[in-house]
Amino acid sequence: MLYRFLHLWVPPLLRLYWRLEVEGSPVPPGPAIVVSNHESLLDPFVLGAAIDRPLRYLAKRELWDSRLLGKAAESLGAIPVSRQRGDVGAVEAASRAMDAGDTLIIFPQGTTLGPSDRLWQRGAARLALTTGAPLVPVAIVGARKGLGPGMRLPRPARVRVVVGEPIRVAPGPVTIPAARELTARVRAEVEALGGASSPSNTR
Image 1 (spheres, rainbow, N blue to C red):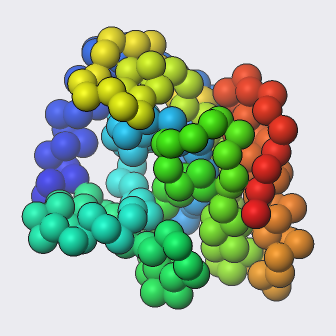
Image 2 (cartoon, rainbow, N blue to C red; image 1 turned 90 degrees about the vertical axis):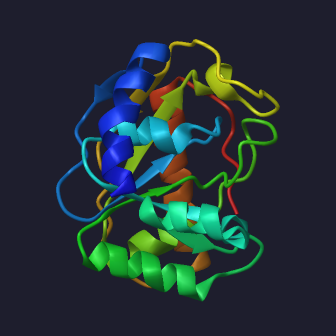
Image 3 (tube, helix red, strand yellow; image 1 turned 45 degrees about the vertical axis):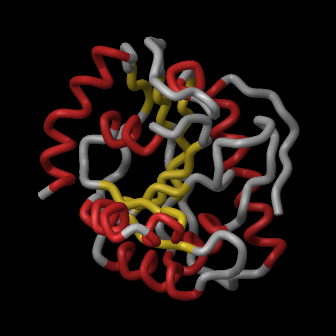
């Protein structure tokens, strides 16, 4: 109910205030893992406005320390994940979301803090190798100017969301080299869509 309410009212507000533009290919039907850079606290809402379908997210488990925030996150389709260690429960929940045909958003940078070339985690690649769901590279451009780290209130900005062609992934062994190679590939796609040229840095 909350997701439907926000999806009805938030996208028009974002398009108006941030002059949101969406470019590129539509997200393919069926299960998909949308992989995006993460520069603003409003990135999940930006993607929700740009992609015309229900979305699910991996969100830090600390949000569930507050019952109110936890309930709100769950109503928005969030899946809690512990960021400091491998979270088997989160992986299983994400896999069930893929089995149900959901579209899952993953921000491999994990946080908006730090330099733009910070590490990319391999969770999205591991999930794709496990489930065979395609990885959809997406670049968010300009959101950091609208609400970046340390900013208390959003500012007017021009924000673009550029959706790339899906990377088809065949299910296979989830090895460190395979996950690292796939992570580097999707990162290069995201950076190319956003016009970035920073060197890859993946775990």
